[in-house]
Image (cartoon, rainbow, N blue to C red; front, side):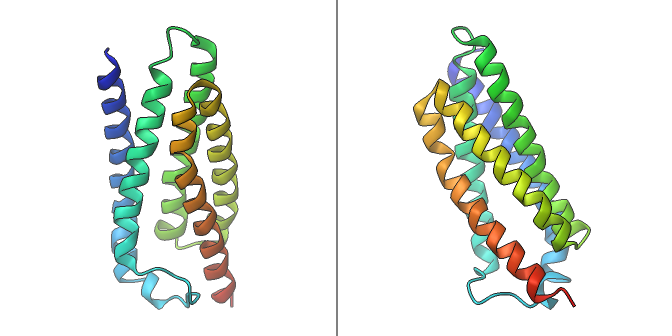
Length: 159
């Protein structure tokens, strides 16, 4: 498989996971989510889809760049891609916990683990390809914001 194909495979995989995670989110966005008390810094709903789409593309490019180093750094690349796959699965799980189960507390606990796995992916990717590491910084920042937002929503609706 050539370098461009590897990047495209991972980008499409990330976007597909994002799409299926969004399926859980869609119905709750119009029914349950509007009933929640949200903090003043809660962004408008329309912002989430473009931001996540861009983040999934950046994640996929980053993972593709790392995968492209498989011949020269096999063990390091394999480890980094396993960590990447775990964080991607946790990313999808958060949507299910928050929107599917309508459980901000459980989602809040899970997002902490997700953040740690994103940070670990950033560290592993940076060892292999600096650009791949840099591509994870916006994702790390967005999930940091999402963690605060998740915690605030839980706090405001805990009664």
